[in-house]
Amino acid sequence: MPFRDLTGHRRLLERTARAAARGSLPPSLIFAGPEGIGKRRAALALAQLFNCASAAGADAETAPDACGQCPSCRRIARAVHADILIVEPGDTGAIKVEQARQLIERSAYRPFEGRRRVAIVDDADAMEHSAQNALLKTLEEPPAASTFVLVTSRPDVLLPTVRSRCQRLRFGALTPADVATVLMRDHGYTETDAHAAALLADGSIGRALEGDSEAYADARENVAAMLRALARNPDPRGRVAAGKLLGADKGDRHEMARRLRLLASMLRDLGLMVCRGDEGALANADMKTGLEPMITSFEGGRAVRAFSAVDEALSALERNASPKIVADWLAFQI
Image 1 (cartoon, rainbow, N blue to C red):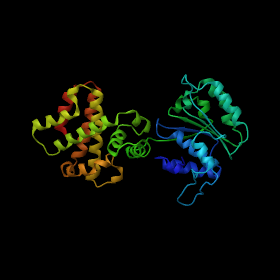
Image 2 (image 1 turned 135 degrees about the horizontal axis):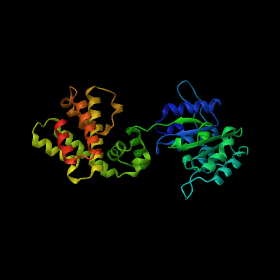
Image 3 (image 1 turned 180 degrees about the vertical axis):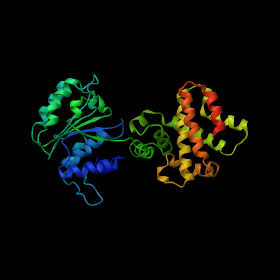
Image 4 (image 1 turned 30 degrees about the vertical axis):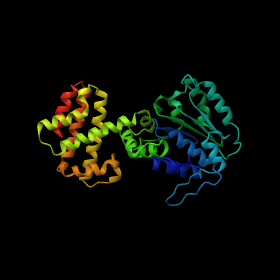
């Protein structure tokens, strides 16, 4: 897909596209960042821009981009373009020296059907040292019409000699809103399930897809119910009962930690709403109407104090404190 269809990383992608259009983009690149955030897609989008038959030009506000519809763009999207070379780990989980040598040989030829060959090494940190060493000369002096993109979530695993020959582009984690958008658009998630999964994905679409979205949604509803119960309930028994919604009685520390992180995200949203901040930054945007009645209860710094208490509760849980004691303590701090 073209750059415009990628989620997140907008400034980085626009700078990359403009440099590619000007011819100033270095020919050896490292796309580095957390797993599951679209680095490989960005490499393919760059390949489309280089070879698109009708790429849109840049103006003051819009960066150049591929059309996404021409035969070249479609073949790149299907990974069948003759000039787009993709190397990835084999069955052993490693990229062997033979794969690197084949890549070097194929990249030496002039483009067959496009304007520029693009060699993409996915999970480049899986390259054996012999494979990395084989690439050194090519990365230092790539063929005139070739660009090399090493895609990795662990750039420091690459040999220093490889890193020194490439320009590193740093991709950050996606926002929960970005992750939720992709889950709904590309993977058929409902709005509720998408936002629940996105909150615990640490900015990674891949990590969100690995989780149980229904379990996330149930956990988030329990946490929201706890927060509603604590908002205006001074009764000690009621507070202890609300604290049970953290799941401490089940003895599952992982699940309780997950609910504490969900609680922190809701308290952060409440603090943002109390300050009348940018609602586009809400992590739980789909729960805005449910959070609004609690705004007055969390004014005067209460949201900030409660957020800090959740952070202390998470630390205590990590230090092996009793889940029930942590839940009871937190219920009286919020």
